[in-house]
Length: 124
Image 1 (cartoon, rainbow, N blue to C red):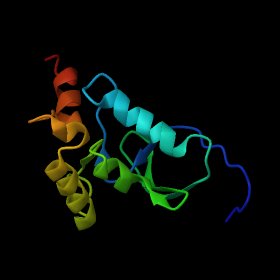
Image 2: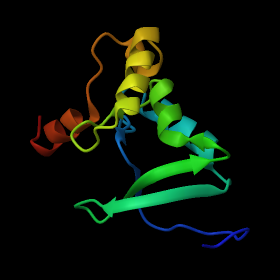
Image 3: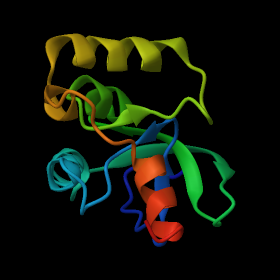
Image 4: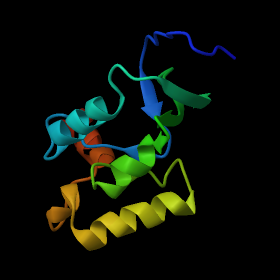
């Protein structure tokens, strides 16, 4: 384990268990801005669990004592990606954001990013 050293991470990384809106979707820019605000230029602890089918590392991300996936879910800036993650706390954090109608949950029926991507692949 490397301590007190700057680690530069190259390549795509995915936050395990969540899926945020794509940049061209409603709330996509807000989700990106929040993530950048949370992590840019800061020390991160990333626990990699696997590589996805696209070769991206998928893991849990922590920054200054904050669990990044928790923050994004509670602010309504991501969905719990239940197809790949069954953690009950993620479901609870999303449910909390929905109840408060924060972030993308201010919309009555926000489009899920995985459905949006599928529609684009199929030319809809």
